[in-house]
Length: 321
Image 1: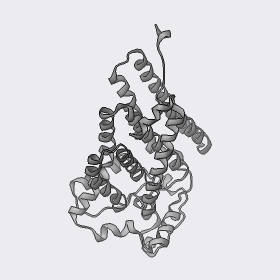
Image 2: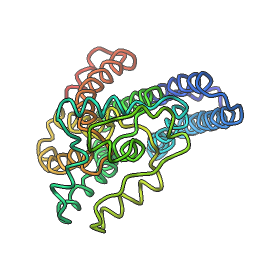
Image 3: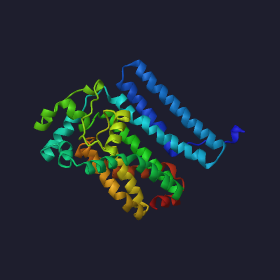
Image 4: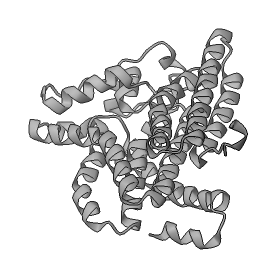
């Protein structure tokens, strides 16, 4: 019976295997602690086995919920891949001094340091923190929207999102940047205010103190601070994946001509962009880099999907909405 099963991996699963291979090489290259290397590689084996298990079950019993769970599994894995970028890059020298120096050169100040000072009102703080948190439901809700409204295009959308996440995470794994919320404390606030930025090496190997936020004690601010305590790591500042992925989602919505959805989400998206600097998670340069990479990753991911996974030329019309 098993011989008759057509065992096929989804395009996103295939690229997950590629991501696992590349990051495994980085782990072996960057890390000297044999125990830590063994643990990270063991996790990869379990993740691969999980992907194979879902693929096998879905191939044997083709019902929509099993295929849906394969997508869910890959999406949930992002919560592991993100903090792992710190496990890979933490022995490398931090590069935030370059970003802060460039920011100072362009603006003559640090916008991330001044933004919440000018707009310290609790109502504004809550809008910003809500905008920052909207990133997570934005991904989930738009993913479900595409899945149930246009299952064919969902495959492209999901591939584009996961593909872009992997590219962001590869950048973070080799270019350690942490953002103002970590770097300003490490650099010394007095020197930040003077525009002096120090090369701090691998300071974050043993330190992860986050800068304090205005004492507004709002509901959404408390949620942001809680998520930072639970899931945040000193990693992943440049370019901003918050900005990049949310922009990528907006591009897909616009390309599919879902203009009502686009209009409805736009204020939330704008708040999200501003919030990344307001809560000091990113420099302004991270935001612009996130915007640019979003368009680059959109066209690259769609091109890769067309070239590798669309067998019939006429099917390429599906990508144009």
